[in-house]
Figure (cartoon, rainbow, N blue to C red):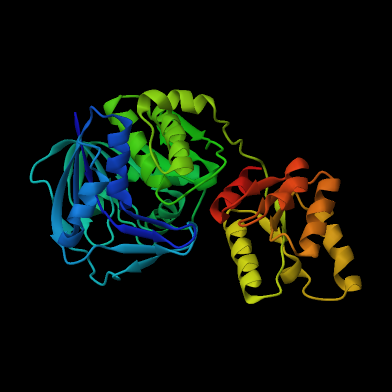
Amino acid sequence: MTISVIGGVYKECCAWPAHESLQGSAGRAALCLAQLDKSLDIELYTQIAKSDEENLKEVFAFNKNCNLNIQYAQTTTKFDYFHPLSEPKISPLQQSTPLPSFSPIAESVEAAIIFGMIEANPVVTSETAVYDPQNTYNPVLFSEMGCKADRLAYVTNKNELKLFFNKHVGDVQSVEVMAKWLYEFEKANVVVVKCGDKGAFIYSPDLQEWVLPYKTDSVFPIGSGDSFVASFAYYWIEKELPPIVAAKKASAATAHYVSSKTMAPADSLDDFAKELSPIEKEPGTRLVYLAGPFFTLAELWMINEAKFHIESAGMKVFSPYHDIGIGTADQVVHKDIEAIKQCDVVYAVFNGTDPGTLFEVGYARSINKPVVILAENPKDEELKMYDGSGCVITSDFASSMYRLAWV
């Protein structure tokens, strides 16, 4: 079987940690498929600038089972991230509405993975299709694009599902209710809803089930959804596995990707999955005590960024800076200590020198509160006591946010 991958290939640049690639949703999915199964025939259809063609060929230099079908564009779209969880700046900004059609395949194909694109509207007819809208602000339904498929799997994220439901039905409801609506509205065979660190929800008439994510020590989230789509499509289309089984294998494959930025061959993923632990969903909303210095612009920026992303993950935050402010010892110390007692977990931005943060971490561990520490440039001696007392220590911001959600 040949799987056709249709969608965007984009430049991706991250400032911290430093990362540059020419992949995007379709490029990464095609690369993941090629790494999953060297015997699989893959056709990648995309648009990039002619000046980037050689660079894209280099990406697939060791994956001869993928054939590149390129239509030249004036420029290649670029995504700039400050860190992997930040909202990217996209250039050039796309002004055209509606988007021009991108019809790379004249006839129907047997199997396709189709991604929504920034710069164009892909139009494809296939016997079997896996569709990912790939649009944060204005996702387009498969039927609205003019695409057709005899068998259709939606793999969308929770935000896109909310936008679809709000536009066509009304007030947002639970993931389960909205997934059922999308299944019926689009006459799909299965709907998979990616929910980040919460896992994925699978809906079909005979099965509604959550697939939990796997815990990894490090998480590089740029492209994690693309790797999930590619691996789900591989197991659902090529291996003909039931959607729930395909989703569980895709979850393990994604865990491999976020911890290594590569995809393992399918025959070794089962062994890899045996070493992983699924993350059990926890009831209720946890309260996070946010510890860290806030006495310079850089320090305060970090506190604000951490607060934003912790709350975006559905947790509540107690921040000494935001909830108490700068004051005397009599004004802040007892309130801080009481907040540590009341919290479920402490998240500490650690630089090894701020005495207030060191005290907060030590006090939290003395009363058996779990602690997640972000320590980007520490000396080994600085972390000895924290490592030995059971703190979770991470060296990059994105990983620390996931570890906090999973701790």
